[in-house]
Image (cartoon, rainbow, N blue to C red; front, side, top):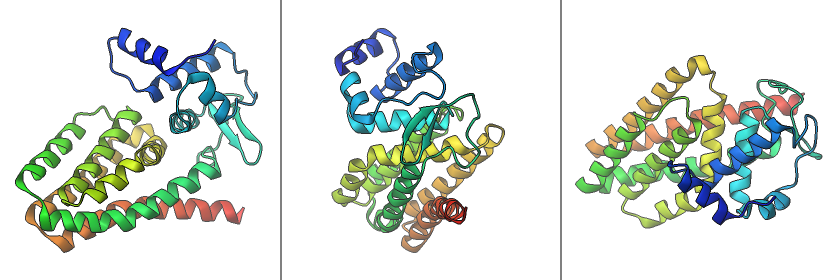
Length: 251
């Protein structure tokens, strides 16, 4: 049975809840794993095969597979492919994210660190009252997102950074973030998903405080402060990725 984009969208509409194609593909793959259509230890279809079957883009499939890796339903074996886990928790705490996904997320963060620190500085210098209000509204919406919903937390986080880009009054900053949207959301889901469930609330509150520091600097039109707050926010995650990569290379 194949699932094209139109069918998936119809299913989303009939469910009474707005759901993205990615979420629907995640659910479909998850159901197949639970039913045994993809047995434990079996190799998953390739990205092109899944794209053809579901009628969606490669970015949708990549995010769906990344989500299932976070849930430890799938594991990646370097140079071989992606496999269904033998049992929940098969993968180790830091090894269940494959090297390709990890390196890609690190590269995206390196780019964001360079671009978004200056973006925040320009936002502080140029922001209009209307764009500042819009940024605060996005921030307020982030505070009511359920902390255990990785997908929504990631999307809300992305919308915040996009709103900062809009405040810069330079359309190219927003264009860069939109072009990287799926890659950024995958990275955000990796970070949110790795937070220990018991520590998730503390982790999300810390991220919110960092976002709040960025807003405060932009509102005060503190160019240096905005640049510093954004760099601190992004570089902490980048350092974690570098450390994880270095530890793997040392093995």
